[in-house]
Image 1 (cartoon, rainbow, N blue to C red):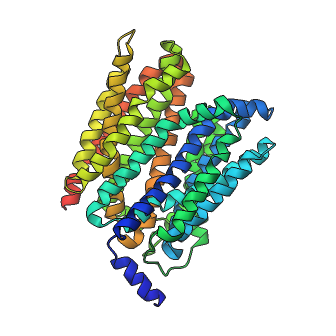
Image 2 (cartoon, rainbow, N blue to C red; image 1 turned 45 degrees about the vertical axis):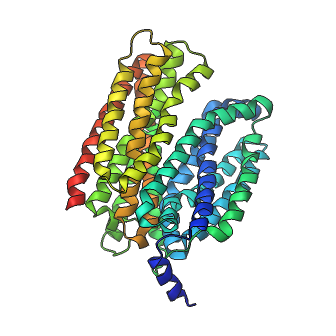
Image 3 (cartoon, rainbow, N blue to C red; image 1 turned 135 degrees about the vertical axis):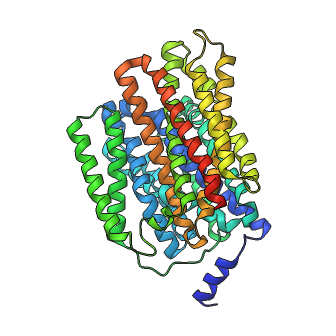
Length: 460
């Protein structure tokens, strides 16, 4: 069969055979869990790593930042490579690099070696996450796309819930390198499953635009680092310099690619109203979520005096409810307007954040838990329908670019949320938690309005 015939077959195929669908979704779930767990476990282990490597906290933080930055700048270029060379090719390469760099992390004996290994891990994770949702579009029939994306969201929520617990359990019986060693057998299993069970996709015939990829990576990288630098109190001159580089690179990118039919940076997709609105909704929602995730532990431990283990337990209802509601919301989004579902979910999230900000002076665990549950359920109701809209609004041949933009919007929102709450805590100490939560509620409310605007856009 010729390459052209294969591309036509891939384009016309509406999902894999049932048994292969299950194996392919299990492969996606394992890989996604590895990529998301790895960030959480590294956060927990940072103090131990800093002591073991005789390094300061400001240096050790690059173990986390290096991973996140490499992930952010590689998402869109890898998505483009997936459209040209096949999503499963990029996915398998990313999974292999992630597994090998995990082994390198475990055997690192200096902070420089560990940081570089983490950067490689971030590149591998980008290979996984850039085309993750695009592959789902080829695994299941279009009528079940929302349900499948809901399962993905449930896996992500479960990984977020279990991350600190898994890290704590491993560190209670072993040293920090074992946090990375555990990735190796799971990565090998996922690689074996991916070899024969991931679907092919129709390919783009355009050449890879290296200049466009570099400009896109530079603009996104500088945007995220400038926001994080602002949150960490870096001198304003350095923040302004990063923003200037971001604006210059972004301007050059727009001038270079805005008139191209299939640009390296997906300006063609941003012209689709429902796609652009969904990305804005995602940035606002993830910024609100991250503000709460960062601020609440300071409040629960610093103001209320709960021990760290209890803080983790009190935070659990949020990701737990997100994981439970996400697949239900995904199934509903196959029949109900995702704009409406997302609007209701984000309204619930905003309400929950306001309730968290105005808790009693001495709240009982139940007072905290039900508010966390409301936030988690609202976020779960938003996430799956929103992801489905982002992927479904793009032409099938542009699923990779849509998947890459989905991940970029999430990382941008999380970086923005972290920076905003860092500013509040830096200026007001523990008194900054209340303004931080109220700011998060406002962001969720704005995202709710944008989500509801999609109802009219989708009808049009």
